[in-house]
Length: 264
Image (tube, rainbow, N blue to C red; front, side):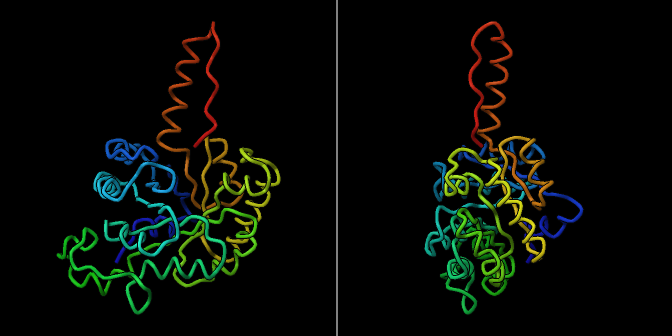
């Protein structure tokens, strides 16, 4: 079975897939982001109001656009991941993976037995409500697993995590990584950036795709130049706030302009 996000990763040598985050939990906004030209988008269940029913609606909305959805689950938890997969997600972004054992647990949660521990359901949106021929036998091949490394301790385990069968890509989270390094809010701090650059280089040596997210085009370009294979530009809410604040600042040139948002 084909996987749209994995196909993007396979073409990374000639095209750096550019994505964004969907934080609004709105199907309308998600569909609009899918029409804006992004190659992929994170439907975020970790730091947004998005619940399971809302996820199904976002997947329906994005499904009619060219944007490949990558669902970030709230945690590396088997039952939750099972439900997200049943809702129709085929590519998962799993946060805060610290070692190879946690990586193996994440992969196992996405696979039906005997390759994993995903519970079987004959009637789910994932199987087109039972109409996909041989879905239960073929589903494992159509899934993509991306693991987030968000601490220096996790980055130190990069080789072991990347070697786990079923791990398709790694993702460096600059916000949590900077905080864990004692540089809260300083995502582009030289120490943080150097650790990320070195990690990206190691992923290249291992032949493992690696991604990250930047809050603005300049940050995204720095990450691309540093060797990251796929990079997200801000988020729906971040782009909205940046545009709104820039417009207001232009109209209030003779007054106090609002501070620019630093968030994704």
